[in-house]
Image (spheres, one colour):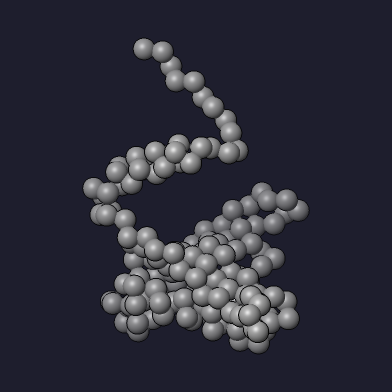
Length: 147
């Protein structure tokens, strides 16, 4: 049997990505059950213009916050807190018990910690000495959360 040929690309074919995803899901399913991932977006608009929002996904009991951005003019006015609270409430409604995310040292770690997130991991070695933090939070109102 000949060895497989390796291909390095920054643009894999969608069919190849789908094949890898199907294989991974099939491998994981006996351990974690059927995947129940759903995208979640909470968007803030002013006069039709997007001024901020949060995009993530829920699944397997967790909310993952992937993207969270506010226009500079809307920061420190409570909008970020409202967006995060709305996402967490929807995640609880979807059966999530916890949320997790990552952020860089120059981004919003103190904001997330004020909202109950706790550090569980850190990566170093980014350009200019920056760090990436991984945070988790037990969601209030989730079954078994005690809150």
